[in-house]
Image (cartoon, rainbow over all chains, first blue to last red; front, side, top):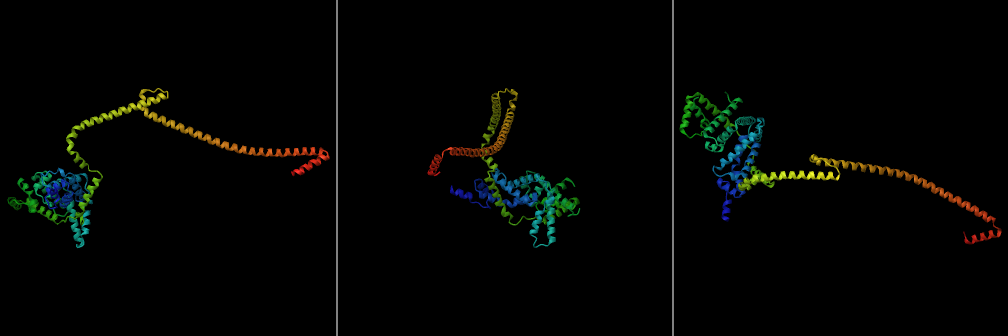
Amino acid sequence: MRSIILNRNNIDINSEDTVIIESFRRGNEKAFNYIVLKYQKKIYWFIRKMVIDHDEADDLTQEVFIKLYDSIDSFRGDSKFFTYIYKMAMNHSLNHLKKRHIILNKKGDFSKEAYNLKSDEKNSDEIYDSYNKTKNLEEAILTLPDQQRAVFNLRYYENLTYEEISNILNKSIGGLKANYFHAIKKIEEHLKKKRIFNE
Amino acid sequence: MDKNSSKLSYHIPDYINGNINDKEIISAIENEININPEFKKIYENFRNTFNFIHSANVSEPPDHYFNTILPRINSRIHTRSNLGFSLISFLRNIRSHWKYLIPALPVILILLIYRISFYKITNIADSSENFSNKNTENGVIMNKDMNDNSHVNESEDIVQRDNDQLNSEINTFNTLKSKKVKNNEQNKFYNIEENIIENSEETDFFSKDEEELNNLENEFLDLNEESQIEILNNLKNEKL
């Protein structure tokens, strides 16, 4: 009995997801911490690319993990755990985006702060140029419909395969490729509108 | 652009980022770029767009941000648990009892509705009984149709009675106060009068003594000399 308990608790952040989850299900609270530590960056960045704003992304990231804490029993292991948690993060982000209307002007404030903080070694023109690029890209991403934004983020930033994205979004691979294509097209059009590119 | 070229164009983003392993698709794309200017234009625009996306640094969160997420999540979970706010955990606990709860739910609802309606009927009956009892005491015969308004009438009566009582108390108080004032004034008067009477009585007393003395003096003078000397000696001996 004691060896079972020891085995149950003998996990770390590098353990298999299924082992960590099983340990958490059996009451090992530390296992939940490993899940957070393992996925926090991925989930934060995915949500951040969806909502753009850091504060909102921060809040949503926490909520996703709290939701995971509450509903871990509903993960049956039919798909990979990362697909499950990405799906949760994506649904949570989409619900959030539906609830609020995005004010484009507000966006990029955090970016400015971040660049100001890290501006010691750069000259002001570089900072301004870099800040503008980021701001324009964020604005372009915000113009994408929710579905296209999710596909663009998962494919470009998260580097997931179409099969994996298909599991998360429950869409056909052909449809996902089309979504990705149109997402890039829309970003391009936004940049042209901003006169960053020539027609 | 024909249908084949259009389908092939969906591979352009992955072709630019080197994410296509299928050599046939790669060669088909390269061929299309060479022979189809429209396709080539799409490819070049996409390449520029990706160059821009690559060059745009994504703004980083503050330093040590990722060290703070876990403590804050745990804090939120524990705060919520301490408040007994975990509806989900409650649902999780009763999940195994759903198969009993669902059939029992209609029965519970029926009982609840029955209970509420019974409670209402009992309340109406009680209120009408109270109202008729009060009316009988006052010797008033009320119409049954007014039973619904019994509570309102009763409370209005109570308020009216309270007002009347309060008014009568105020009147009594005022009367007593005015009486007291009058009494005080009368007392003052009586005191003055008593003083005058007392003074007058004292004056009478002195006037009476004077007469008596005069009488006594006359009686003394009417006596013979021996008797006068005897009386004087007696008085002298008694040291009056």
